[in-house]
Image 1: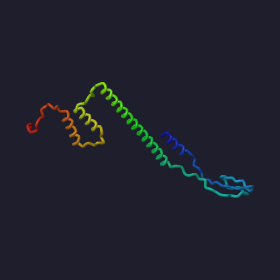
Image 2: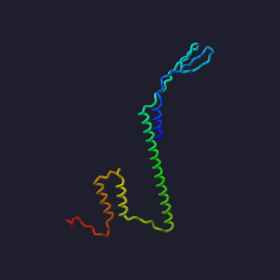
Image 3: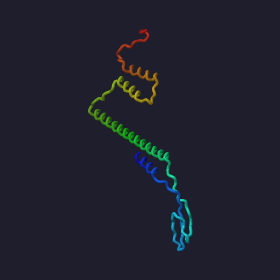
Image 4: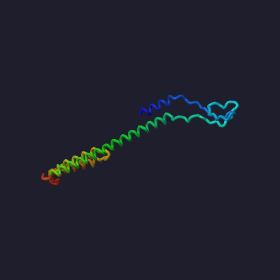
Length: 164
């Protein structure tokens, strides 16, 4: 970003270049010269070319270039973050698998979460994803499902017909 602003400042501070022409001249002895002033007397002008430089980029074009460079830098940084997150997730997965195999070899049973804990974990994960855009109905159904998963299977179920 600093480079872009420095470039912009240099371009804006540069003096305006005046229009010039280049002349190719051949003198009486046959020597060829290219110069910015017309050919002197006694020499022949071979050609004359406009030497006006192309106009530099406008401030809007410079700003657009700076914005594009910043966007590309942000995209590259985001891709690097995503790649690092993926690498860490893969590493954690390998470590968990290695631990599971070590526990299995040692005769240990893996700890299993209850259905209630799994249901709460699922509901929390769904709520943490705003892009799912769960409707009020879907959120209510999710809460009801969690309650159902957390019910004690040995507890008596209240019958709706008897409670009326």
